[in-house]
Image (tube, rainbow, N blue to C red):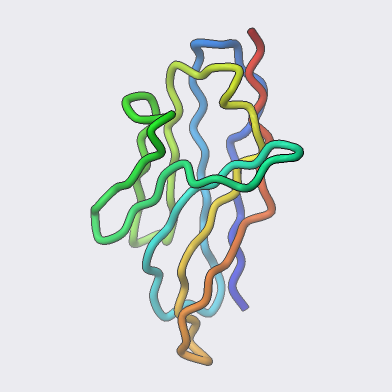
Length: 120
């Protein structure tokens, strides 16, 4: 069984910073793309950033402010969020494309989500 556990959300003033972490654990053979998505009430979940084989991809709205990174040895992905804006407030979910030990078939797993609130 594979689990993704997120941490690091919270309340911050506009212009402030937060760092999110997400660790994948369980019977893991390999982890491919890892990423962060966010969702607000009434809206679809949107990609914030992802990383695969060192290649990063960002939503236009966060470019230059957010940085995604990962520690492959720990199967952990991070999202450093700087210059936060009220419109960044959302529930942030991490995702990971994981190949379990068995069955050895890639599946996408999701974390439970962590709330980010930005006060103006």
